[in-house]
Image (cartoon, rainbow, N blue to C red; front, side, top):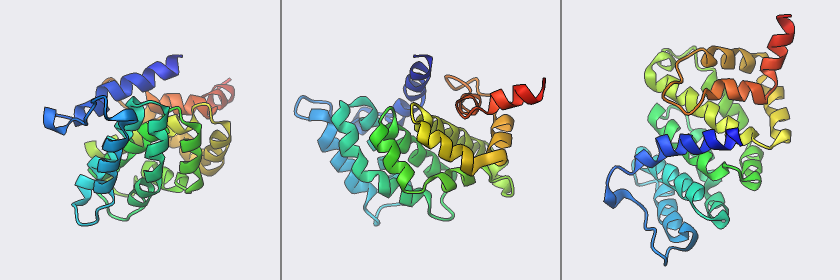
Length: 217
């Protein structure tokens, strides 16, 4: 229950702020059953290669918000775009802002949705997510936007691991000692603006904290 509350507070704190004005908000009328029409609109923007990448990424975040706030079928409709979001995240040289928006979108689509979690898992996204955490060779990773990318990566990985033991095993196997060390470092940073310390929570879900406690005794 505590985990669910922290996920909810994260979206209340961060995602809703994406809609800064009334005209940016999706249509919540009775005709917009399960948000499907709005998901289709944002999905069209997401797939439009003629639009700037940042605008496409904002559409991705909006799809995530609709999947999060809609009925269960909203997650089904949004799942159609998981591949598109993963494709953007795998692009080289995308900005930190684009990465953050895409991670927000994926978090909303996969939030407490086992089928969508598995769909994202099957797209071999784990390596790209681990790369987001292991960008120390890039000096930009120490800047605020670089830290924010890592923070959202921790959040999304926490979403992916929630009630998904198969993915926990995959992440532990692929991440190994590198992931354990990165999470320990990230957990020591300031998470006061977040609902909780997601690096610490993810480390706990993966069993790393337990291993650390054993090694220290």
